[in-house]
Image 1 (tube, helix red, strand yellow):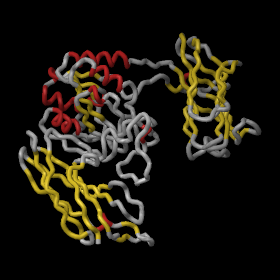
Image 2 (cartoon, helix red, strand yellow; image 1 turned 120 degrees about the vertical axis):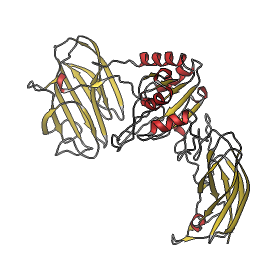
Image 3 (spheres, rainbow, N blue to C red; image 1 turned 60 degrees about the horizontal axis):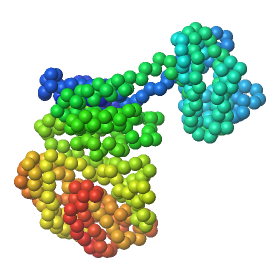
Image 4 (cartoon, one colour; image 1 turned 180 degrees about the vertical axis):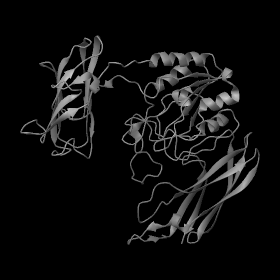
Length: 457
């Protein structure tokens, strides 16, 4: 078995979690079950790909010779009038949100100038970059090398720098902030070693010599770390494609807290989403991969094919609009409630009894038609086609889990309470409106097996 990906050797417990008491990684658990000789590990390219690093105070000097840059702040966006504050900044890596950079200016109405000397610690060709959300401009010596003063939005600009170790270069950076929520960063390529290609090649080599490859890509997310793209970060998508191209069967194990787009899906044999699995998650993952346990999780969110489909929810209002696009269907990659198993289940004999005012009892027969014992999550959805207020086209009304041996059948019952059928009245108090309501039973919001109607009186 080739186990590939930094997340296989890390115990990531999720944001706001502590370090754990005894974290068992996937690699630990697979080694324990199979023996180290049967498991080959390759770290892969990781979750990010560094192209630059923020220039630290070790390489910056103020006009007075101190570490950092001399900063001057103004209360307007055009560097005019008397300065409000002067101080030394250790580095230029700012995210201005609710608070101003210095007292006396508004967080959405100021400008600043940083001056000093850039002192490289090596000789050679480097790349110097500025990334910002509003206007900025940069001088090296007396030469204006970047002019984005009229900019309106996020962008990155870079220029070459012929560095000589220890030889200082005069630097002046100016920026304006005429709107809220700004960023500014001064960086360079010094010290950045991109080993991602080498790590991908090692992963491919490990996969070629294995019976199966377990690729574990991960996400980078958290507070103030939202993602604009739902693609796997760094070169992890390329990693999956190149490992799959070896012909070795591939299982992708996703580690992270949100949906992922999967343009590589048709090249792999299976996908297992473990979210942030907890400190014993490696044990659970190994048991699933080796068939000791049968997966029975269901998606609590919808996975889109592409970000352009967002917001994407099965529980949307009946707007009358078409859901499709000229270049893509409006349907999800994986719907709400979706989840596979090592066995299969059949649904039959739907019975609806009771009155909405006291609750409707939903009963059906579930049979395990596959070769393994397993759990099925039986889901009941509601559709109210005629109502005085807008109702979703489909809404989860209830669900339950049933465990069945191979060939075993069992009647499953769910009681849908009165509140499921109520709508807000004119005074916003819940009321029951007479009429037919459709109930659908199935294995996900798209895999609906049984259908019936109840009359609300």
